[in-house]
Amino acid sequence: MNKNTPMILSVIALVAVIVLGILHFTGGCKANTTVAGTAAADSVKAVAGSVVYFDITRVAAEYDYANELGDATEKKIKGITDEVTRRGNQLQNQVNAFQNDYNKGNLTSFQAERKAKELQTKQQEFDAYYQQQEQKAAEERAVMLNKIGNAILEYVQKFNEEKHFALIISTQGPATVAAGDGGLDITNAIIAGLNEEYVAKKAKGLVE
Image 1 (tube, helix red, strand yellow):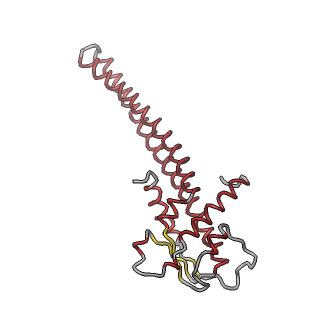
Image 2 (cartoon, rainbow, N blue to C red; image 1 turned 45 degrees about the horizontal axis):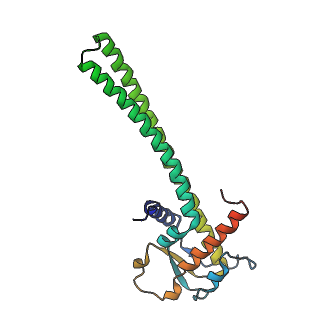
Image 3 (tube, rainbow, N blue to C red; image 1 turned 90 degrees about the horizontal axis):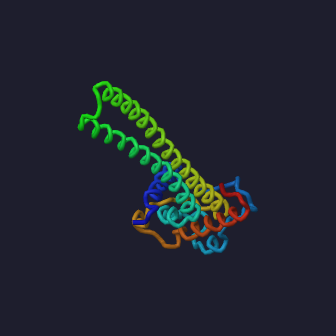
């Protein structure tokens, strides 16, 4: 399984919420709009007014920005989980040492009671820390998914300002299209355009 599969599925869910069904732009279009991925866009056979579709699973998997941002985010999250694990192991070692001393009779009742209370406090502090870091990791993922979802949505909107399709539908894999003309599948154009736009923005230092 692709290492980015969970992220791809999350992006799919996010884009579904954002509703990547874009109605035909009428009088409000900008006549001079330039869409990234010109060659790919020109290869699209569908005409203005058509209902077209793209495979969001492929887009999420092959979009360079999504992959790079996903890798960077997972690196951050790994740092968070590694630190949580380190602290958890440290606390567990202290508990084990206390249990060992207690079983060997190396502690007085007073010492054992005091140590038990100390470890209980540390456990409570660790539980609070764990929940805080878990929320932090979830927020990192949410921000990542919002950035990717918004980037795809914004590009598809610009793409349609030039193409004037009646409707652009995002599908989760080719199997969700029971039947259709292959010329209505604009997946390659969307991927090429997104990546070309990303390269251009990256070169200008416009990527967050």
